[in-house]
Every structure is written in C-alpha cells, then in structure tokens.
Image (cartoon, rainbow, N blue to C red; front, side):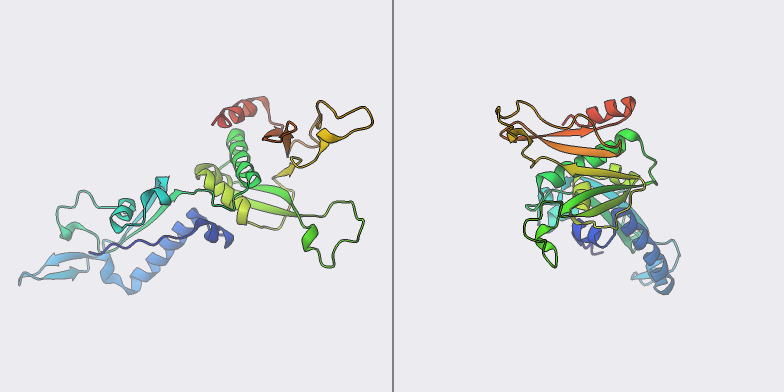
Length: 271
C-alpha cells in the first residue's frame, strides 16, 4: 500500500469559488462514479490457495475521510514522515487484508496570513466571522461582506485633474455562515483577499475603513481636536474601522448589534 499526499493552496481554490465543503462533496461524487468502472478498487485483498494475494471484488467500497488539523502546514514541515501525520490510518486493521484498497481523505489545516495579508484584511475577516457567530446565523444562510476598494489608479480613462470625490469600487466576499464560522480565521481572511463576487445588498454587512482619514488634524483656527469621529452608524448593517490616537497605532471597531449578540461578540473579540 502506498499513501500519497497532495497539498493545495486554499486561497487559489477559493479564488475559483471552491471551499472545503465543496471540495469534499466533489471528491465524493467523483469517486462514486469512478468506482463503477474501476470496481476492483471497492474490494479487498485476499489470499488464494496458492498463497498469493489477489483482489476479491466484495463491493465493500472505498473509504472517505474528512479531517481538520489544529496546526498550520508550516508547522508540520516538508518531510514525508512529517506529512504522514496528516494521513488517516486504519488503526484497528490487523493485517493488510483488512485495509481498504482505496482511501481518500480531505484534510484542512490552519491558514496563516501570508506576507500580502494587510491589517484591513486580517481585521475584516476576524470581525466578519465573529459577528456572524455572535448573531447565530443559520449555517446554510449565505453571508456577505461588502467593502470598498480604492480604484483611483485603475480607472480608464483616469479621473479628471482636480477631482475630489470618491474613486472606489465595491467588492463582495460571500460564504455560507456555517462554513465561515466553522473554519479557521485564515479562511475568512482568504475570502477577503481573493473572493470578488458581484455586490448585492441583501443579507450584507457593509464594512468601511476611516483609519486613514485625518479627522484628528482638522484645524478651524483654534487648534486640532482632542477627539474626533462619528457619533452614530448610518445603518445597523455597517461596520466602521477608525484609527486610534494621533499615532494611529491601533484601530477601533464601531458596529451595532442586539444586546445579547453584542455580549457574545465582545467575548469573541477577547484574544
């Protein structure tokens, strides 16, 4: 028996609209069709009268395994022996005769933000997932995160000289609530990084960042303000990221939730 491991990039898969749930279902459907043609793989090994091994077409089927590792792939390492730790093993098998001929496994490992992960992407994914958990959204419900991306340098033709309005493009990340809340934080961050669905407002959380606005430097002639910022949210489905202090070394998150959900959200924010 030879066991092989294939490691795939979660961000690349999500860019194609594939998450772990979709991948497992697709693998299961494909395997069920393949075994119709290659039915010996659904059998088991047996020992013939001559003492040689042969495949007995028992129709017992292949084994499908779905797993989740509480570590990042970088923590496992690249060695074959280390990767084997991620592979399912038939623990109660007394001999090779009791081992299925085909075992397919899909294992999810924790994602780490790569070098291109920005503060906005990390915080957006964290808040989106925590808010969805706090609201106890139904697992099958699709939740969306809508946010603006600066497109000033990408407009063709370019914006006219002297233009001082917005130059943004709205983009949207979409996921089933159960998948979002049940996956590691890196999964949510990856959705913010690569998912670009067509924006819509139904069931959508609008996130906007004011962390780069220089509200604290506004001077009407009597000095800079000692404190500045919005006094209320325009809508309940809106989240604002605000810079903290003149040094802008922190970000305040402003959002509205029902009281019970807010307590749950505050607990989830304690990291």
